[in-house]
Image (cartoon, rainbow, N blue to C red; front, side, top):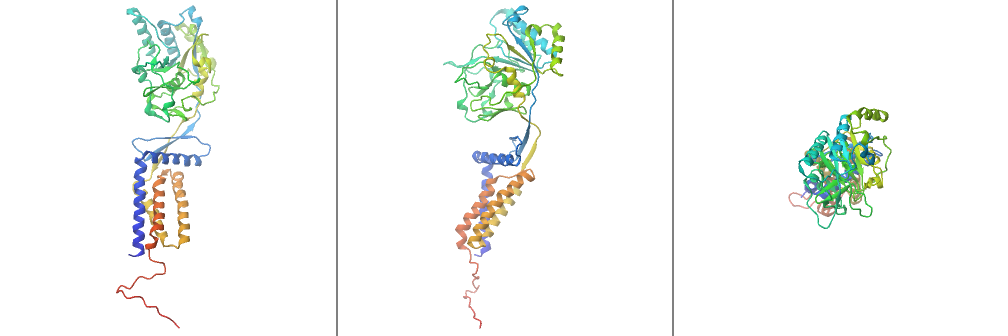
Length: 448
């Protein structure tokens, strides 16, 4: 068998190895994750100082979307404080009819998101009680999004997650990382009196503390309940729970909204920033329709735009809110608004199937041809090939926004190198002549 036929066979074997690995890259999750990590690392090295995220594109795995990050802007909030002074004209704690007036007032001012820190829970029965709750539900229905809270805990005997919490929760399938460390809950202390509606989302206010942990997410079966500040950030970014993706120990990504750094159990890992001063009103100042003009004047003193979100918080001295004990709620939500968020899209398409086969074929042929070189030069050539191959793939990433997996190309080169070592003995020597077709041995001639 002649030398070129053997080399061709070795090139085909190396090409087959590369094609098989190319299929594995798509179907074998560990290898695909390694490729994704390498892609991200190369992109980071080429964009020193720039921040970005890489979106998964389904069902098109041959496309990667790179989204640069830009700094967010803290938004103004209308902050309505509820304290003992509310008892002068209203009630304290507030009753459904009090909330009806407050919600109507802030909606007429121009707010479209209402976030209420205090759980709306009242005991009662009869037609009169149901009528009061119906009035409350009517006021809540005016807003695009309403954030309500419930108090959660974990007694020995739990209960299935209620439907109203399930529709507001982040699916556990949207989480990567060690979920076993998350703080778990299994019961609502008191169910909310407000009727669940499509525009209402529920968040948690209190939880049992574990080593003074203050996570932004709690696990209930296969769902994650967001904290009140996190739910407010979701509403401000107009992000549904299904659009929230969590990488424990890294970040919570709110769709196209802010990317929030967290640790392994979901605690915030950010430095709080000073956002715009909130427009603060007391409950007794933001109840009657006659006070709307005063609220507008208070807003104009602080900002030129009407706040999209109104925060209702309990400002009494006996308020058990964990945010009152540690960090001011307004400061937390403003800091979340200021975090980087994706803006713009860069499309990186994978090389076509035939282009990848041609690339692997070139690598395989080069590996086969190198078998004809003497030993030292052959090994040096393989070393140069292994250096040039990553450089070629890097140029694809950086120059044309095209990409191809590294593993198939490396597998092709390594297979050719191994075959070069094992099969070189079967190749004719460089100084050896082909035998005579008739079987007669070659006769050496001497010259004088």
